[in-house]
Image (cartoon, rainbow, N blue to C red; front, side, top):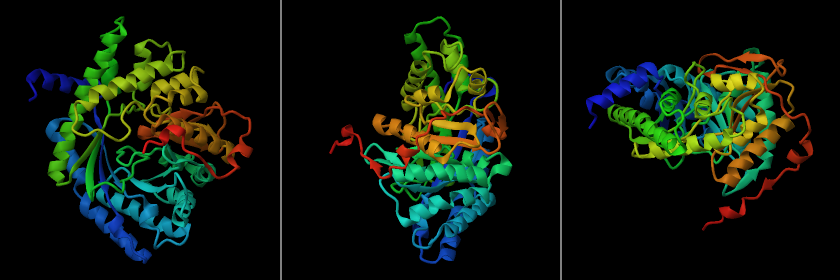
Length: 454
């Protein structure tokens, strides 16, 4: 039972420390929409999404009003479309029709985004997988709310380097296809290793094939709350610091648990998971970078940054896992450049480089996220960046991802505006030496020896 002190404390976190529930995401299985007739597939997809999600936005707004908890986004994730459209889609253009259907359904029910325009190719690609991947640039250029993801590796299967090489080109093509919007399409495209199938956060959300017909997943936030709590622990040792983070993460997660259970009850859809991630925004005071600096760094990127982030991530998980019935998704601290004012400042001042960000991804929740790079970066270099990040995930048995944006027409030192929660970003330099011969070898990097656990 909540007591009056906890109610007052939670209200203060909402009003003064930017606590919010970042997203309620309804996962919807589209496996029963498969058909050999493409028109039938599109009709089934549209009707099922609208039937399940027609009250999602209204319910989220009602819960926010009834409990006084801001719920920033209402979203949908669906079964990877490469699986759903495989029988009907004979070429990339056929898959684009499904992207348009997803976008139309998202507009109809009023959600911010729909994720799941995806393919899972960690070991190999079917014809359907390849057709979907090749359709991504056009699909993201002609839709507004569709998000796409491709899983190119896992600890159990190794890295599909053919898919990595292909995705290097697809990222560049997506940038070109959306160049009039500062290559915004790439902000809706993420390349994974060890992708979780219950992730509520975009752009990487999709509804896993082992999930129920529909579920409710909730992603919490609250970097500002953690920072304020740590301000009260200045000068204390690591034991006090860790206890402070754990207790704060527990309180944040309890709010998400309450919202998830209430959304599940009102919508008549089972509760899936709470994602414990600290998800920053461009707003002042809502920054993971500022948490790390409160811990004791002059600037993010300084020596000690990776250790501080590892500690933060671990304590958030330890505190949050006790506050929810089911924890999943990504769960930890996001370090997107464009969405975090502290990260932006660190890059601008030269404290934070792409290489240091890569080191930080060894211990954070996701990976290289929302990073603007020069528009003339080659597809092979982008593929090399993807390969490096996927290797970190494969070896360390964790999720890693790449969401880089080669902004066509921009060079190092320029700034690109994405708007809203996506923020803005300085264009970061990329190592100019070539990895072309490496990424063009083709084939698959085998799974690491520690993956054999049967």
